[in-house]
Structures are given as C-alpha cells and as structure tokens.
Image 1 (cartoon, rainbow over the protein chains, first blue to last red):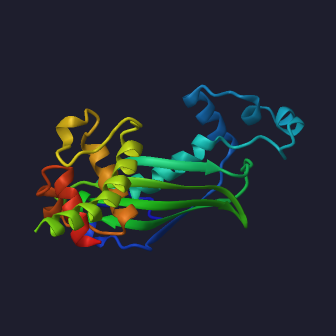
Image 2 (spheres, rainbow over the protein chains, first blue to last red):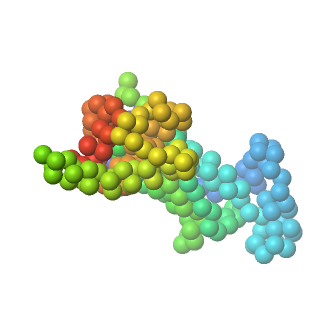
Image 3 (cartoon, rainbow over the protein chains, first blue to last red):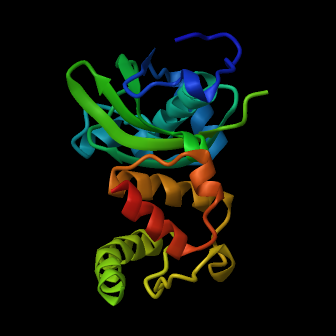
Length: 144
Length: 88
C-alpha cells in the first residue's frame, strides 16, 4: 500500500473486485499510544498476567486499533483522498497478539454511481487465522 | 383499463413490502409505513447520509443499479416503486 499522501481518484476508476492489502504489526508503543488516546486501560489489553489468566496467549490488541488500520486504508487509498467514511459493520472473531504480523484486506464489492458510494468487504488475518471481518461504506466526493 | 390498474397494483405490493422493510431498517423506525406520496419531507432522519444508505440498500436488495438522473427525478416513494417495476 502507498504510504505517501492520500491519493485522489475519480469514482469511475473504482471497480468491483479491486483489492487493497495493508500488512501491519501492532507494537507495545502502538498499544500504549492507543491506551493514552482512548482512555481504555482494561487489563486485557494492558496486563500480560491478567490476559493469560483469562485464557489468552497474552495481551490482546484493541479492536478499535484494528479499526484504525481500516481508517488508514479508507482514508488513504480505497477510496482515498476524496472519501467520506459513512458506515462500518465489524465482527472481532479471534484475538490478535502484540507483535503478531497481520494483514488487512479491503475489497470493493459495490460501486453505486447514483449516490457515489462504495461498499467494501474487510478481512483482517494473522496467517490463516481470521481476526476480524466486516463491511464498510464510503462516499466519494465529486471529482474536482 | 381497470384490469390493467389492478395488475399494476398487485405488482407494486411486494415492492412496497420490501421497501418498507428497508426504510424501517435505514431510518431505525419500526412504525414507518410507506405510502406512494411519502417523500423526504415526511421522514425527519432522511438526510444526505441516510439517503445514500437507502439507495445502496435498495440497489442491493432489488439487485438493480440506478443512474444519477433516475434518482434525481424521483419525487416520492410512488415514483421509486414505478422505477423499480421497470428495472426488475
């Protein structure tokens, strides 16, 4: 995925089936920054021993931090610069651990020219394990 | 002539039922009942974002794709039903 400035694209350039992938690994620093930002210091995310006592392999990455990765893809690339994010429906189906490599896959499943809207199907995986799945919708502003 | 009107009405009823379900979901209002004259002025939450959700939901449910001018020319739900009768 392009890490430069958000890219402008015309609505006509999006095609159903187009896919963007973002590889990422959540670090201790990301967790601490998100805890400070959100105020969510639930021990499941902050306390290794507590997380293990609940049956997890270690501290669990914040679900909303995964949503932040979705925000990155929508705001920067699909649809990118001229997008307004209008909806998200997401299920967190397995925990992601800190330091565990993951990949977000966003695929265009519908383009509605009448209202300049895109629907995306989302998958976050860590290897073969599905971490989260969902759908997002966005509107593409009129071409400049 | 009366036979044609009756046939058209019968065709429109399943469309109204399907639309009513979509409208209730989009506007989060279980008491909403559509009439042919219903338009955006009758539904307080019919703003630009919900309009987009509504059109995308209708396209998806009826497996159709609207053109920009088709949407712009709609005055009320009755027009929408007529358009769906043509496109489905």
